[in-house]
Amino acid sequence: MHKNFAFFCFLISSMLFAQISPKDTIRVENYPTDSVSTVKKPSEIEVYSDIKAANAPTKTMKFNPTRAGLYSAVLPGLGQYYNKKYWKIPIVWGAIGTGVGITMWNQKQYTRYRNAFVAELNGQKHEFSDIPGVTKEVLGRTQDRVKRQRDYAIAITSLLYVLNIVDAVVDAHLYEGRKDPDLAVKPTVIFDEFGKNASNAGLSLSYNF
Image 1 (cartoon, helix red, strand yellow):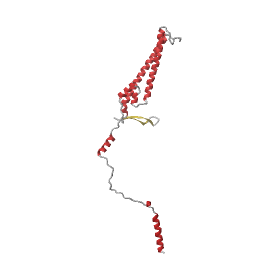
Image 2 (tube, one colour):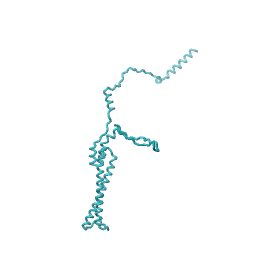
Image 3 (spheres, one colour):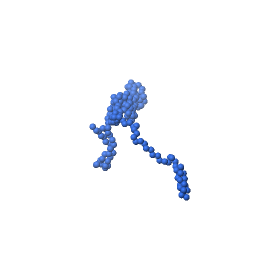
Image 4 (cartoon, helix red, strand yellow):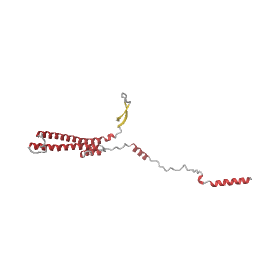
């Protein structure tokens, strides 16, 4: 009886052992800890180069004021394009273009009234001859007024042309200063002890020297 029971237990344990998959076993591998590392340490020269590159001053874009002014003198707005101030180009073109247009219109009107005034002095027919009350005095005053308006338009347009050059030169000259970390304009909170509001939003200008 004891022999049969022992044989039965041995048979069951053999069947269970035969069903265990090799993949179910836990495998422990011991890797050597004294292997040589393949990571190469940087040399002193490389470390020094990295430190020097990290501490090097940042390069700022510089523009030549003379070149910017020359570009704007040749073509208004070209200096602003050189300074990468693209939003100023439509303003420059609009201002100078308006001045040129007003000047040309007044010049055309002056030519009309001048020819009529000369024809009236010589007793000849002109385009205003059929209008009652048009005399040489009226034509003379009108031509003088239109001429004065034309001269004003020329002066203002010339001033805008010069301002276009000055703006390009100043922008190119001050570009590096605006990038200077010692000169900063940033938003801040302004505390007002005497006003109704305890604090207000504003801008702060700081300059370190």
